[in-house]
Image 1 (cartoon, rainbow, N blue to C red):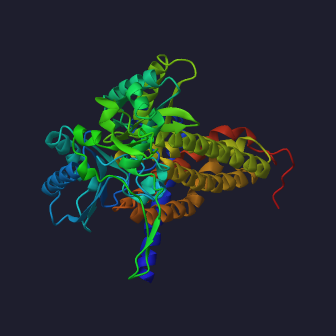
Image 2 (image 1 turned 180 degrees about the vertical axis):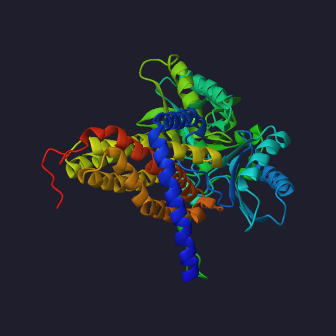
Length: 556
């Protein structure tokens, strides 16, 4: 160990002396560092729009949640057959050695059940969710999702497919929404808002990188309308309200029966009673016309006489919406979408242009709202940006108080832009977007870079107060403080490397680590080269002074 330590010290001293000679040359040729810093800042300006923005990195949780919606009006037994065919297609695309299990959840739960515990995007018996769990060591989940997006619409052109967040982290980030992007058409002008929503869905689908764009509401579910012959109904002693009540009770039960509870004498278990016509017995319009309605035509006995719905009503085909959403009491049409192969920030920019264009087609009192991860991302970036700015300002003000002047802290602050350039460069090289974790890493990198710069500036200031020129003090500070600066940066970088590798499920931590590593890789040379240069250039006017602040400072 002693030999290794001695060899390390000899090598490090050689590096230290080479650095001192190099720093002396750079300070002698004053244009090299400004040109270099200008190129670094130019690189940052070029990379910033290319890095892209996201709320949080996508996580590979090894799970796929596919929502399947058959055409409106499909019966549940037909929906089951569709799901079976989709399952078979999934098994063709995802090999057996890659998948753990496949689970279907078709239709809405039976009453009584709190729908808050169900998938809110399921609206009827014609849609549901297929959950696919992959085995350990699986191929990237995103690759399977991309393949399924390509193949399923080709195999089942009449059905609608869209993928939802399967992992709990992304579900939380969506704040309960089934997709990253939610664009709403809100207002009481329902007909015009629906037209705008349909145009909005089409234009969103045309944006590169946008996938699974669909209108959440079903507005064209097939239905039968019963047109009541009020004259005939009156002759039978009926009115529209009575007929509607009889029809509702027959088809869906009023659950008001006597007795409404029945106790099994063998087990003692009570059962709740609800009486209705079995759906299996209503397979045609003729069967629907045989729905009984009570009449009181027998006036002599005043005894209700059963009649048929077909005696007082005729049927016609039409369409109805199967679900209706509201926000602050106002009707809402929602378009959900996700991103694939493109960052959320660039997609959000195009969406804002589309929304601004379509907003002109709405009547006063109606609006288009963009929520979901776009809204969360924008607010988070603003707040973190303000936090980063205030952190730099507070650090500067604290240094002003400590140094008793405004010049020395300014040297530290001028070195920080290179840290941000390093962050952008690392994110670009690793294919990582600018997101909340990477911004947190940026704040960490700025903190470490500031500490290293303060370490060097403080020593240089002491040397200048001791009588050396700013040029000599800067070189001495670099020569003396290179060891702690490199130790601090190396410890942080080495500690972040395992996190930066980003195994499956660790993508969020990887973004933070990559930002820290990139920032310090640029900040460390800046601290050792640019900070001494700035000190020598900006503080040379203090050569020979006994104090540099507003109060007299005397070295003891």
